[in-house]
Length: 373
Ligand SMILES: [Mn+2]
Image 1 (spheres, rainbow, N blue to C red):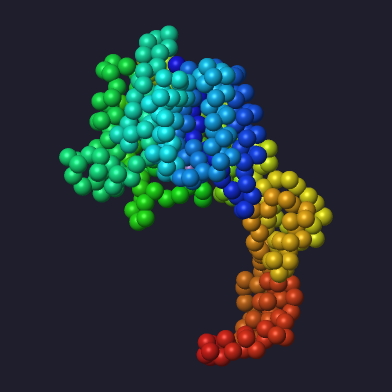
Image 2 (image 1 turned 45 degrees about the vertical axis):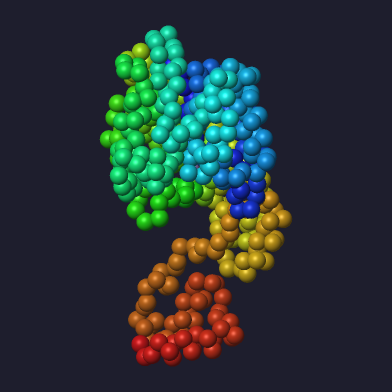
């Protein structure tokens, strides 16, 4: 069986105040649909965080509707999708029982749903469980007692999920969780306040493939059976270096798995760009840019002028270039200077300019308050 695994679409997301709608439309309506046309999977799995927020913008809902229509009606490929921690599970489940007959399989219960798919080797159970808090699981499973954390939740849930699958069938699980051993970026929203929100790999025993969502970096765990496809777009500066992709999964007759990363190319890549103001001002780029200024300027002024050259700035910060040795090691001559003179030398080294007269009384007051060295 051939599956396309993706997750964390975050439709409706903004980045640094810029709507990503057109970039998402470009990626999903263009490259992703073409990928499905080229690979002809038996199903597409979308492992949660379909939308960026529980009540998404109308443009985002319309885009999802169009993509699902093209996949299921246009290409004849069924879709399995689950809510993530950014989605509102009940809103996403609207019409789920009606839609399942038309090829759209939505995990509309926190206790999981299973559907039977077929390939040349026989049936495959695809079982799907949306993100659920420990509290919600405890409410749905009153006999389970206190469920203290996500790990305890998955421990209770796993046997129920297996119970949804007929014996002897190959089993694929779609889930949204932070599996221990995975690596975060800066764009996941934490699953718990205090505690890690992580669940152990061992709970996923017995599934031939686990299609995971939540972590935005593509990665494989559990000896290859568990995988995060990662998000299709970079949603934070920490992802600037990541090649985003969709995972192609080949499940053989015995349940053995081989995965391939199918790369995606964003319309406007997210990059970190470092330079001095004059150099940055002399260039231009349509990309999403986290700018790092190496010379000190009033930030609001710099941002205003750079925005004329770069329409998609997502952040601007001042960074010091590598410090000269004179700024990091105090020489014998330096030690002989007064604290004020040392600070003036430090300011000169860091900012490339003398300490402004207006700042001197502030520094003197601070040095006096700090007491004798
Ligand atoms: Mn996410």
